[in-house]
Length: 442
Picture: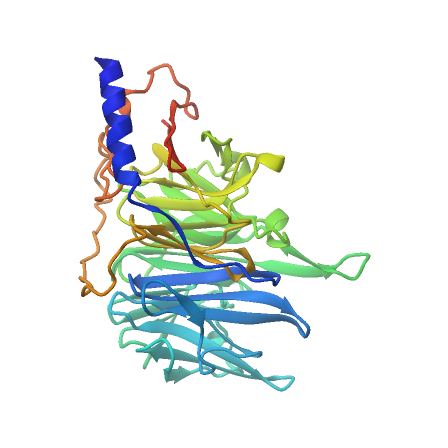
């Protein structure tokens, strides 16, 4: 009977996953480049920004997606040799909110909050004063959050700027009295509940004249339940620079961050750890763990991107396997980290930031200016888009025994096939023929 049950799970999951594959939406180019930011707000509209090495040194590049299938270079209004938009977020209505910065001459910097209706042209709604420390934004991809007409934006001096009228008027909220605290992460799930994080980075020069960045023991994470008016300290005095945080329905927190070992890494590595006690017992990277997958362990200490979709859904990009056997892959969970699925990204050399619109619409900005999407290759984008209300998490609800999968990513209860004697990081692994496998982690 148990064998029959496993066969049912295998073929049921296979039939669903076989509809979705990793699609190369933009092939690699012959250039040294890496993605820094990607935000997809609807199934036809997205924005991505990265850096590339050219004859004049490192310069920004950006792409927009306007048809759900192709990523094209941004219009000159949004990009140029000394002009870039980051952070930025594409909203569920298709508009984009971002910070555009243009360097003019040696010292003059023109920066403003913009709104773009078509992802090609924009309207500036607020101009920053470069002589005002409160207007010096941190620029990290997750330092901007938008919910409804509310915008939260991190600065380099321990503050958050908040607007309730889509960027026209702002108030400054102090999170830290440390003057060089960079607010590198602002993540709101609704108009009231959110997290922020920041850290202090010092720079020096090594014997060869190369710049060396050090993450100081000043990193902190804060939480708010009143829209950012007041904040509670979750974690402080840690040698980290927080980059993203996701909370599951059980209260488990997944935190992506830089430490001194990764911040200067040319591979773009980040750390991801999780905690069930709001990091009371936080031990940094030592608290991380590897996830067993069919192609080899996935290291949470060497990841490239993380984003969340529905409640308890998390996607992480990195490598499966090690050495010459390492393959670019993603792992994802829809039950808050108890069960993980592996998806190899065919042809990808290295992945980057992820934007999860839904379980069937996941986007990655990869290396060499490549762009990838997980979904149905035969999707009809001529059909009108349906605006879905985001699922609001119940943070007092326990993780359900049966993972809640969206259509296209259904699975049965992993407790039926796991052994009670398994340790925390052991698991049975099931293989799929379409480059998708699952690993049950308890």
